[in-house]
Image (cartoon, rainbow, N blue to C red; front, top):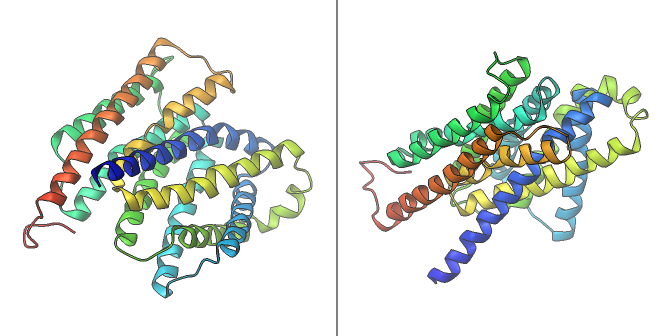
Length: 311
């Protein structure tokens, strides 16, 4: 039994790392797209393709909604997810792809704070020491070439990190011990995002869509199918099998992938500070993952009395 759980845990961790990888690559792709089309058009098309793809998957899987509560949860999560992607896309259009991937990693600090407040079961001090090391790693990455005042794009990415932390925590809190399907929840989120952003982008779609080159459609397909359909499904499913804090740590490797893509495909420079910062983030993620896992296991083995705390 313990071996089976360990394998399941490793698989969940691998899935979340996959989410971090595709999201890390998404910043460069999204930035390129905002050069050839308005941000709202990019977002609307990304969501529309995602919603259609997920609808086909639901039909093939004969997915069913369990009730109105599941719809309500999906709509709420769809609004928060749409807010995250909107802030991220506008942010990356006004800053570098590498900076965007690095700043969003602050979610590894914000999510555990929210999770601890809502569960009334604060994480141990070593966990926050690990997140501090991760922040130091991000600072080293961003400081390459000298410190500078954050621009509007950097500020939007900070806001995106805060909203993403809320979204990840809500996924964990609202779906815990509920018979919800990750597929239907993800589909509802995509449909909500498609409706909202298509309504906003409607005045520009008629002129922008015919002008999109074939390469842009390929990039949109990647954002929709890999960075949205796969990532949303994987994130929702994996978070339900672990904790929001552990998920945020694993997905906190996203800036490392963002740097790797920026260097490998975007032609960005890899310096000593970049390497040191990336190494600190990876080490901090691994350390925090072990601390959080031990803390969660202890909470399961030694139940907390209702009057003391615990969700």
